[in-house]
Image (spheres, rainbow, N blue to C red):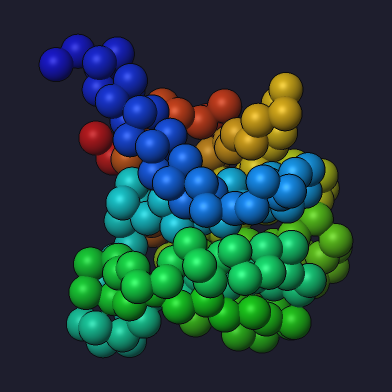
Amino acid sequence: MSPLTLARRAVAIIATALAAAVGGLPAAAQGDTLEYAVKAAYLYKFTPFVDWPAAAFAGPSSPFYVCVLGDDPFGPTLDQAVAGHQVGDHPVRVRRLQTAQDVTECHILYIGPTRGQAGEAALNRLRGAPVLTVTEASSGLSGQIVQFVVHGGHVRFTIDAAAASAAHVAISAKLLSLAAATSSEGARQ
């Protein structure tokens, strides 16, 4: 298959998964609610396209933690998106954190747009740790691996593959091809 065909298939798979994940929202869900429902689905749907080292887990069946630092814009939507799912043999759990102290126990860390110094502290604390860090474009933070952006009313994301490599998480070329923008270092094929 050509790279273009593979990319189209990956887009179709992610689009279908996202539609299924947000399809259960009530018709009244609009604006920020829908935006964060899509972002919640993305947080979980990134997992098949990212490899974490075995050392990132306390044990062979220990939980896979998706963490939210500070104010939680997702509400129950994130919990619903990950309910009953696993990453390999690891059951997915959501943790909500108020400080940067426990971020090293996360596998995915979402830092919202209002976290400022706490977000910077978390990113500094995680330098070199196998955690997929995710922020908002409006946060003004740097050093994260994934950044959510909204273009034309659609949620997209950028990826810093060099930051992923430094964190010892491997991002698939398929996911990199779906990003709105990306650096080219550190991708796995």
